[in-house]
Length: 175
Image (tube, rainbow, N blue to C red; front, side, top):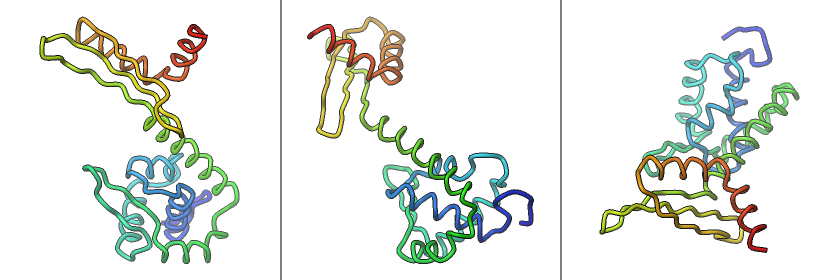
């Protein structure tokens, strides 16, 4: 895997994967880990998969299935070896990766704090339930009657994209 750029070897690629997992500090889904590591097109996807699988085989990374999703997290062995070779990664690569991890983890936390789903009642009517949580728990729950599935899906999408603004608008109107 000789290349031009900041990640020039398999060891550097493995170090980058371990670094991303350590920055995440919690189990990471495969898609999110891929987004953290493959930020630009300088790394070949198949080389990345081979490096990731090798790190799992050598127990630098643990892989578990939870609710049908593959989650990855760094092991003690991985942390120990990362500490030895993290300086092989350019500072700019580490900073770029930290920012990518922060962005993706923020997005995941936001997604976990927002719940919007449709409910069909026994009488055939529909409603959408929208909830917003923060670190202290649920801060808003709103149930809206809708006429069609399409209308309900539109409300769900809007709430997922604008939950904080909707909350602030309702709070401002109430106060």
